[in-house]
Image (cartoon, rainbow, N blue to C red):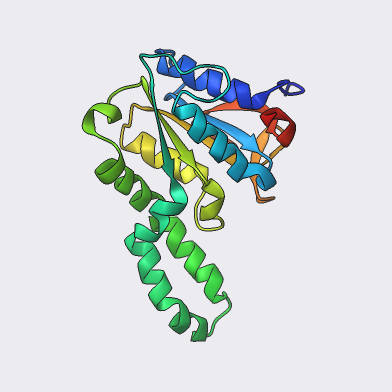
Length: 206
């Protein structure tokens, strides 16, 4: 792996614009960039500003639209989240080798990505946007889903639904051996997305 970009934050935005202009990825126009977890919300704020055309370069071209979607706001709207909140106390009383937290996490991993993407499609994105690569969708505050689901599940579900929008995810974690590590967890060998070299840190937001 290379030593990393002088500004992976700038490269993240640039690559989103490049895909939105029509460049094809290996599978789809998805972009992911590691972000130091402590500054995830600062990066979210900067990306929201950038989406309105008021952020630092690269400037969003006139023929590209950028739409932030806050995952932490979608999460409480999912049926699986509401169900597990209701079941929290009974689950804690059930015996067995696995803790209630482990059982909840497994259930949410099975269903959460599917429900989140369904919520995006039904309530956040129009049919034309889903079919248009020039529409950039920013999935923000991924850390709010920890430890219940990961970027991999979201991207796989978007790919399965054949979403053609350009999708960008700031990923709160590290790059370990060329792979992304979500809050120190094990890294999957492959993400269905173009990965930006390096980790976005505070210095890149100045």
